[in-house]
Amino acid sequence: MAGRPVPVPVEGLEDKILCIKDLEEAGSKKLPKAIRDFFNSGSTDQVTIHENNTAYSKYRIRSRVLIDVSKADTSIELFGRRIAFPLCVSPAGVQKAAHPDGELATSRACAKKGVNQGISSFANYSVADIRTAGLSNGPIDHVMQMYTFKDRELELRMIREAEARGCKAIFLTADSPVLGVRYNEWRGNFRVPEGIAFPCFGWSSEKFREKAHDDTFTSLNDDAHSWAREIPWLRSVTKMEIWIKGVVTAEDTLKAVETGCDGIIVSNHGGRQLDGVPATIDALPECVEAAAGRIRVHIDGGIRSGAEMFKALALGAECCWVGRPALWGLAYDGQQGVEIMLDTFYTEFKRCMQLAGCNSIKDITKSCLGVVRSDGPLARL
Ligand SMILES: Cc1cc2nc3c(=O)[nH]c(=O)nc-3n(C[C@H](O)[C@H](O)[C@H](O)COP(=O)(O)O)c2cc1C
Ligand SMILES: O=C(O)C(=O)c1ccccc1
Image (tube, rainbow, N blue to C red; front, side):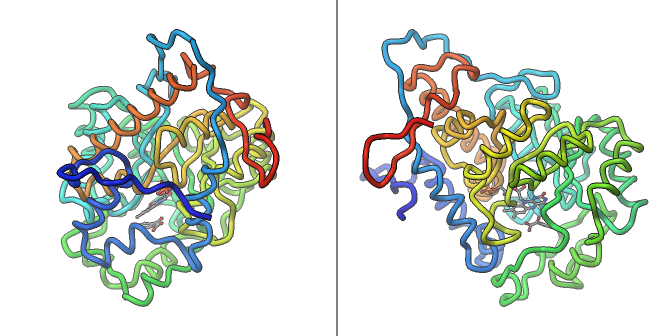
């Protein structure tokens, strides 16, 4: 099935960034092929990334009319603070490969536009520097993304640093006991570019360039992780919130509830881990149902427009996160490019709310959507 319709370029306005697709093209063009492939690819047969990119299109918005939407409020509360609208930037590693200012530029843009940022444990700037960069531009909360490392001392050091710098939560990425099957990285023998450090590990770029990405990850990460081992341990060492990133089933949502987690990110790692798992928007309803309001449910994966944010919220997500759009923004024009990305989502989301007749986030419910079936009228959800 075709994905999203491609915007038709208007003569003379070819370079204008009007939507995320424009930013993807303009940003990707600026990257060397190896980096572009590393950022943009999914795993194995690219089935899940395709699902992420097409699954939203089956939903239609049941817009309501003649409603005063002049004061539509897009804001939500997250970590005890109101943010501008329900979008944050997912933790993605190696942002310096997109732009020299990497995570610093992303942080500055997020703070300026009133949203939060996830810091990857494979960030190229320190948590302290990323926090400082953002905070100089406005209020911002950060979450620290972590894997389950073999070296518990290292994990503890990352937690202590995140706490000391004021991060609000640990996002434990649970979908990566090992890395996904990344043919393009293996064929091209992908190496992180020179001159890129990994301060969370205290490693220089040279240390990372010794081995392929996959081998480095395998040497650091513990595939013997488990719910029973990780969550009680994390709880015993930190007061930060604990969120699980990478859940796509009701069963694992219940595990997150039972082990006392604060939230989940319904995520398939942007289609980069196990290929063949569902689009996150298709996994979302069972996770929301299983959570039953006991823990927070956020989503990432393939969200590329304000209308798609709207659909995710209608299906029960509290907030959306985006990975690659921030990388494309960075590649396009550093901080400015990430600001363009956030402005685009904000404008589209607000306009979608208004056109659908919604005045606040709580107005965005299941009844706002219908689904197209092969024959017959629109089906209510
Ligand atoms: C280049 C790249 C690096 C990533 N690095 C990490 C990472 O270090 N930790 C993590 O939990 N997720 C990582 N992710 C996954 C993102 O956090 C996020 O789940 C995904 O990008 C969302 O899908 P989207 O890119 O379609 O918006 C990475 C994604 C990309 C594209
Ligand atoms: O490539 C990824 O998806 C990812 O999660 C990652 C892991 C380590 C370093 C950089 C990115």
